[in-house]
Image (tube, rainbow over all chains, first blue to last red; front, side, top):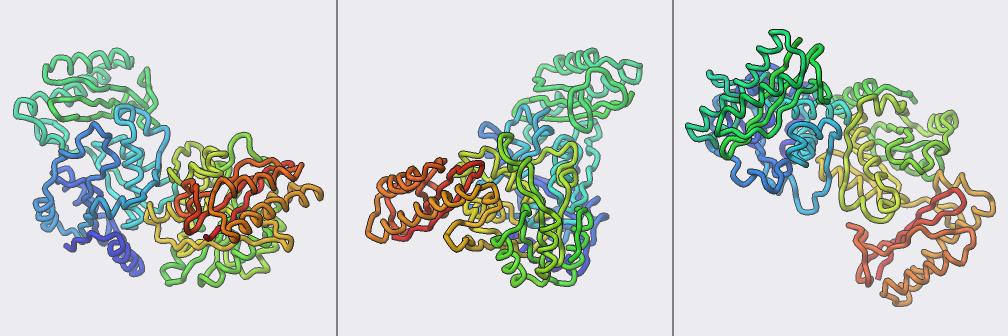
Length: 281
Length: 281
């Protein structure tokens, strides 16, 4: 595995590989790798002749009040993990390489960015969209793999690739979970043991909603009430949002007709945890 | 010359040429071609093995109150002109090909877009930046040639290419003028004979400023007053803005020390005309 920090060097490598008709897969990450990332790496490996994994904790997708400065990092450990995973390139640019003085360009996916996490985290998806446009231009992948744990991010990326005519296949990989159902996330690291147990309320609440729909419930209000009650039942948890929406455009749904995305965000201790379930009538 | 309307076809052509290590030059236009465009075409020809000219009147860079619906067009004439100019590809997508239903992504170059024409035309440079990102992804040029008549646009493009890491060389070509000094523009077509004569006040005003600086004047206020007086002298002209600013970041300059951009916009009849001069102390 070769490590690359320079944008120019990364671009030259990709140009060279493309001229040799090699198919390049990209797995973009913010590091502090876990089993969820490794599933993406494994999937990316299958989808390309060459695999690039990027590690960049993107400052522009954190609001000033968020956890950018404390976001968990362990580059030495990440590099060691990836070296054992048949990765061709580890791209890990510095902040000043990605956002030099005078930087002033942003990319925004309008409607999709306004719902769910976008409403709670103004500017978050603008930061995500912008850094991905940069990464796509630097790495020039044929295919990029994203975790569907961040479902809204997956939709935003898919939309921006289509709207801006990037020739990149966007793959969404299913959420990877711990044995007890907790969606794996770097932010789980923030949880104390007690909070880790409390965090199971997210999956429990989603499971409750799934059961209701299976029993024939179609009314969004009733389902959301049950989910809220389930979270309220957990003293360490504070519900940030729970919404039932169209899985394609994220617009709110009142009655489940075909499919509906149930998405929620919950604060437990220092962690902001998100999860979702695709409900089918 | 081959005409291409489909994004997929254009992308496939470019991918094929790049694999053969051909250097692709792009001249993006909104059509209604004039001598200014042809100078860009000629320059583009020199800079690449292959030359793509695009014609697309981009709706998103016109504000609702602007001249999108009346912007001069004559595609048959444009095609005939380009067929005589050793152009390889004429890319002319439809509006629905570029902005299909559900489109919602925008690119914005923040600071540079706020000055001069950006202040008068909210959203204009967002539209310009967005369509150029799309064209760069579709045509995948190695070099793109822009007229410096639209000086601010040139700065915006150069900035977005650097910020978003496009591997495209951005070339700015000097303003092409009629024999009497009027900057050539598709919008000159709007002018009556009388207005056409009145339009010379732009170049006259710039010339007045150049003479003042040559005589040793360094005070911005004094220079701007003379420019305003020159435009006020022309009954058919209405000054929209005149500003003295840094030629790199467009921030206002009060005293000319080294170089200063003098830029102005004037309305004459239905036409909004812009011009500029680079003043050197």
